[in-house]
Length: 289
Image (tube, rainbow, N blue to C red; front, side, top):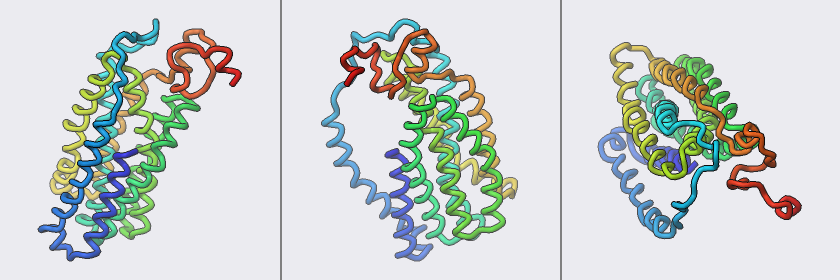
């Protein structure tokens, strides 16, 4: 959710700069103001880092039968899933710039679409977590991703044929909500699939490979394909191709919600939030409270 909040704030800064400066000034030097403003987060980041409490207990081990997935399988599927999430996210952030550079939409509208995409994530990320705690990880991860794959082409096509602020804003919010409902749970699934002793390092590796190898190249690739093919719907096609691969990986990733895993192993576990379960049954006294 914090990353989507950053996107929302970045879009808001872009709207402010593009409203105060001429487009040429924004392109030549105004963007540096946004970078300087971004530096103000460093003191807060350092302060938060100093107050973090160590959570790793080396003596802890996974309960019997909890390691249903091998680490290697989690890494491969996790890279594919997070790569798709990253590609789709960068395409949605690029949506405003695509509308500005390809369709002739004004800069303020393009930045506002990025701000709304971030707002959709801020709203839908916690909603995704709540839904996955209630209904399981897999359906909350797969259904919105499938909806995003179905809606991508029509949404981009609508904006391409009717490049108005209303259509651009509607497409940004709709697609962002579908994406963030899926990715909010996707991150949890990958972390839960890793053994505790390898979780931090494994998740860091998966995330870094997915973002650096696939996500960071998305906007350059999309812009290059637009110039090469002249197809204005290239961003939607690029995202759709990634989503097909991601949906296969999601389908292959088993359920990781702790309560459902316990029930599959024949345990009698209360269907409450995973954080409340820990790694054992609650005492009768705790249940009666």
